[in-house]
Image (cartoon, rainbow, N blue to C red; front, side, top):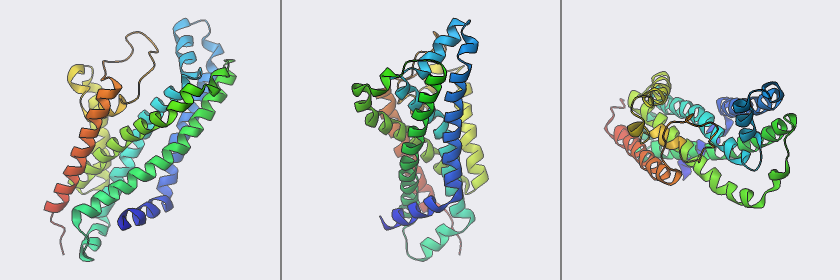
Length: 267
């Protein structure tokens, strides 16, 4: 826990941490406010109007904001985790830790855990900003805000958030593992993002297979609104996606531990 605490403090002090969280929050706010502002402009197009209402109408917006946060925040979190893992090799911090007598695999897994905990704190703040943006967007669109106080939905928000956090944690672990294997910040970020988009393209060809892959599984841990018939590819049910996501998270952590133990760190 000592390594987790010290790494967590370092992450919080990093400018990149605040910039990453700010970018995700800004994108969420921009999307929901823009939807509200353009709602009247698409009033003559029923499909687009229905999609905007589905995104902005409460209490359903609690879930759609979570889905958007998972999709957007997961990619940014992946890149950030890969950058941190790569810096352990590029900056020589892992070598220094091993020289002090730290266990290789414990040090790297503690670093990953600190990243996941920091992401959880950031996700709470960004989710709150996203909800405020959705409220603003609904107001601009002239939609009722009566559902904001729906007690049953609000009671389910903690569980919803845990699922979002799990999905983001798995994507962070994948990026962290790739960077650990490549021992490079740039290679880790690039390869992680390439894997992410590679899955999206592969969905068009092998949807029944790709839905079990890490990024698609992570994306499916939160139930999606059906915005348009046939708009979304086949995905795992949230309960199955949760199990698959946990398996991928554990596999990535084991890969980090094994690769670190076998790596030649140098003198």
